[in-house]
Length: 160
Image (cartoon, rainbow, N blue to C red; front, side, top):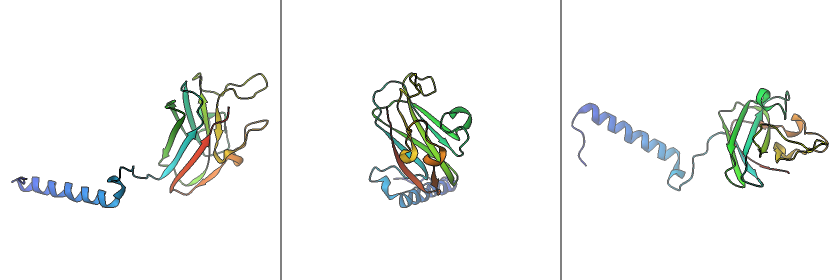
């Protein structure tokens, strides 16, 4: 390999090599095909019954509006076409605090949980902490968890 003759080009090449070495040293899993772990809340959604509609993940940082007023009260919302029977929602850049998650399989993509005449959801739903919805949706307190700024992996299974 022939090195560039211009001094500025040599300096830039040295910087590139130095930065690449640092990135490889700091992320040894790069060679193993692993994705570097990023701090944040990473949610695996299981039990999606079909490939119709969207999977909606909403992260709340306060009880106000939890879990139904997603558009006005959720801190962050992710909506994706259903990829398969599993989905993944990644919330990065989240400050330390107490949070609660709600996940919806919005089969008809109307942005809300459709219910039958007695109020039982007709679409898949799930909450952090596997909080249960008996005669009403769980409270923020029941679904809440502490986030300490490190990488947090959680799984939410949908109920239909």
